[in-house]
Image (cartoon, rainbow, N blue to C red; front, side):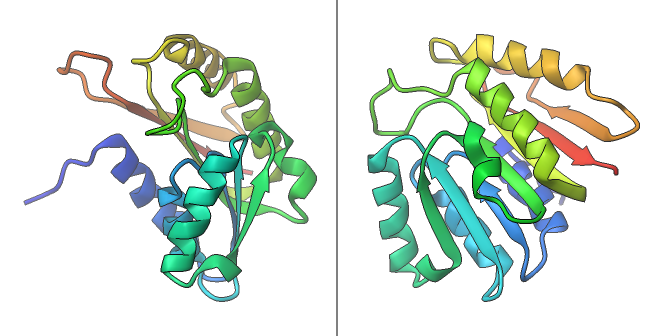
Length: 188
């Protein structure tokens, strides 16, 4: 029986197909560290994860999660906006994961914002290797979430189709603003 994945699970399925041991990848929104841990396992001993967040609290939660799995050596935790990711990358990355909104269990007033997320996406597209992937889990139930989704859709629908393929994965029959997923593949 085939499984129907929720957006976050689907993002991980996509990323798993694009990342190999030894790759350089980015978690653009560390949050509680779940995606960072997933990526650290995926890249193996010779790979590296750059994990960004603006909140020290998020990076500490991520650090504890990684130490608990003895994977901290595969990750650089970076206290900075994801829009500055290209300043920390030397080479090309295979995958970038975004999980937008606010830190679960944290201050709901501290959220990802349309302008910085679009800037981060622009930076990410420049450092993404051909054949690489970006996943963006969109949450629209909080203040600012719908505006961020609209800004990302506006940006993504205008990407050159010769260079990028963009998909939107969503649930059509649920109320209360269910999350959805944007997936961008860099063709060349």
